[in-house]
Amino acid sequence: MQYVNDEETPERQITPEEYLAEQKTQIRKRAFWSIGIGIFIISAHLVLFAVADVEFTLLFRSIFFILGLFALGGGIWGIYYAKNLALKDLIPTPEAIEFARQAERSTPYFTYVLVGLIVTVTLCQMAAGLDESIKIAGFVKPDFWSKGEYWRILTGATLHFGILHIYFNGQALYGFGGLIEFLSNRAHLVIVFVLAIIGGGLCSLFFMPAATSIGASGGVMGLIGYLAIYGYRRKEQLPPDFLKSMLINVGFIAAFGVIAYQIVDNFAHLGGFIVGAIYGFLQIPRDLQKNPREVGTAAEMLGYAALLVFIFTCILSVLLLLKIVTL
Image 1 (cartoon, rainbow, N blue to C red):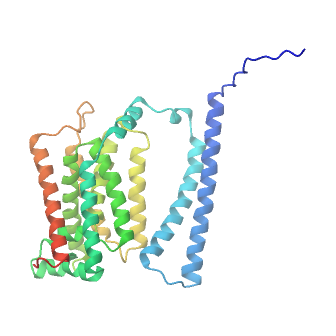
Image 2: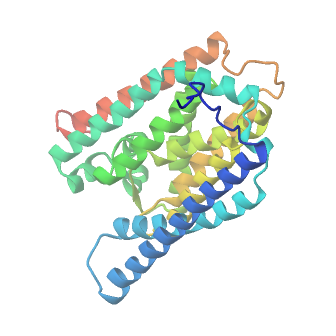
């Protein structure tokens, strides 16, 4: 008779060093894949647009090349990161755990409103026609000066060049806006967004007075500027990669702006970023014991006022695009 041991053999627990080695291996695999994809995209870009001379829009070509460039750069960074990875980097701090837990419970209501507004205006643009809508409500800077149509600095931010443009700006607004509502206060979200739109518009107006600009990216850059200051001021209370991720976003947008300078209003981006950073520098408390989510009555009322300004701006854009009113 054969004796059978019913007790299960316990699984061997891996050591911390083995776990670290396993994580490094996985990161390197993803990094090599990223490098391969980046090289493929860049090579395809050169073949399609330089050698074969395929006709595509400048926006598509720029995004295509930037994606390849960042895939390549991300892969190289991944190899470097894996080489320097330590066990302490894999153990989340109590602050990071609390950050993730609270983030899951937050609901970015103001962000939903802002995204919904610019999407609504974009749908009305499709009905009016892209070129016509830009003439009607875009930030046409000569008209801003000569005809006194100062409202264009705001309505121009509600318009977009098409599906791809609204998709990227909408995604960015949703992501960064939700972060601000969680980390700070939703009042600051709309204050920064509206001020950055105006600041970015004025910067663009100064450096490119004859051009026409549309899009909410100046306001989005203001949110990034605010979050960059937040990440610097309160880095002890945030995940270790928070500030780095903000700077990577800035780098991506800057690189895209340099490559696609013919269609990107870099000065609006720069102005919006500076406004958001200045606001964050003035508003975000240095004292880590102070809760940045707490605001006074004045700031809260100012936030609602900024939201109403943007709502009325979008309503005005819709009325102009549908030719219900003329200015």
